[in-house]
Image 1 (cartoon, rainbow, N blue to C red):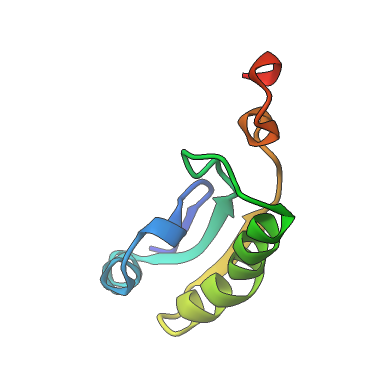
Image 2 (cartoon, rainbow, N blue to C red):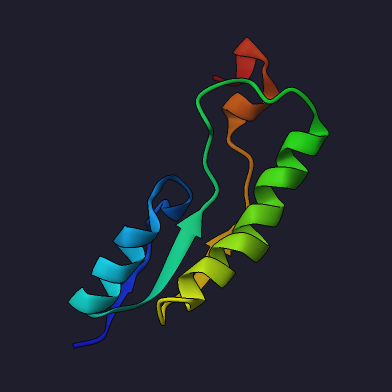
Length: 85
């Protein structure tokens, strides 16, 4: 059976997880951007994170036969403004 996971955060997972997912039938995933749990220090922080979602994670997933897609968004907490949380 081929499985599609529509919401998974692979950035925080190991490559062993990709191997296990493939063995279980996962063939495609969607990774939503998420708040890292602390304020970002600059706009470059977003660029680094989004580059990883668009470049590194699809490459890493492909090594295990899994298609990686992502969604890009900003959580209101990313504004570092208490009025938005």
